[in-house]
Image (cartoon, rainbow, N blue to C red; front, side):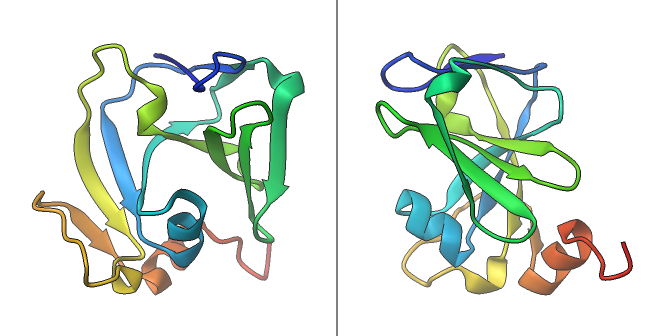
Length: 136
């Protein structure tokens, strides 16, 4: 799959993926104005235009990046595993995703609701799944 930012300065390439997930945490909602709809791409992501990429370490275990020219969100990345989550909106050319999972479901505000049937994980379940343990 290939996606790009609004101005075309940054292009991302990743193997084809079919599923997207929604994150309802406060950081994602503040970052994007609503839930983040992301594609879990693993570590196999190629980024062209990286010299224009701005990276912000948003927590001890993750960083977020955006285009320094137009501000488009490019990725959310787990630092320990280099696992990338790319915004679904980067991919405009005929990609048909399946909505599979919602995370931080217990932090979702009441003013919106998705109709899709998905796996729903709470904050505690997400942290147990992704956050580095204190023993690592």
